[in-house]
Image 1: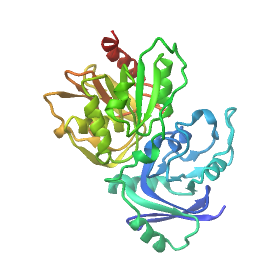
Image 2: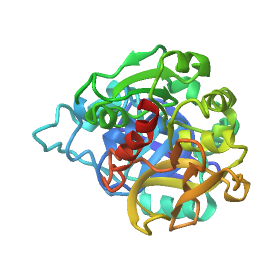
Image 3: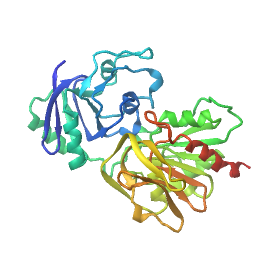
Image 4: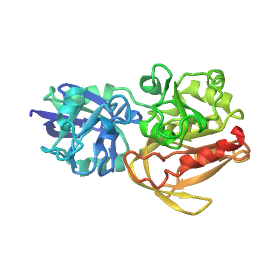
Length: 365
């Protein structure tokens, strides 16, 4: 294994080991607090444009397998670890993580003081960064980091969405459940698995699909999926959502929640260091119950811009009081900023898919 440099845009440089593909990677540095689920993180399309630092110190100890992928390929720009485990010990393991990095051309580095890096990102906010296995001069790498694009104002959805519509294989009583169209802004497979397990007939369509084309499928409900980057840059999706509103029940998840906020007439904002991991406490206003949730986003709906006459906030993040859920007061539309499907993370919020099924029942009747 050769040496590698990690350089942040403020000039901070870390020397580590190259444990993935050879080359360079640039993106926005974020930290993820999950103790397990590194493969799900790697394959979550919401991480497009980002270099992920895992705060848990040992990564790769149970290898990787085909079943735990959350999309068709990894999407992270780069991966940062304290220590890549030299052993993959699990009966489900099909491949060591290092081999997976190399096969998918992922630039990865370990030997990094991830605690120090995480504290920097918490105090200063998310920063652009670069990882290089070839550049030996961190000052030269810093110039390229500062010339790398920011994620603000960039439409990353078009890079991760599916190229054509497809049907998700059934796992429940297909034919009896509601017909659900999922708009793929970067959908995680576990959203599709959870819907199928409840008997839904699930069809996935590209992000740029028009409202007319979605409604032509005669769905009982529409899911607006998670996805990467700045929601304000995905203007075509906002227009589609406005065209669907009032015609079909909708559930927005993560980016889909933010796009609904924009469709309502609200605004979104960039968080200082985002929410990434499986330990975020969220309170349901109706029940006062607190769920521990999985999250991955750098943007949020701005509370004071939500049109209160038509929309109410239903869930709040107890760490920073940001908006975690909304409900339209007269239309069958719900949304969550966090991930009810988890993968990885706790299953506290999985019940919300059944709540969406209940929302579709009047329309089906």
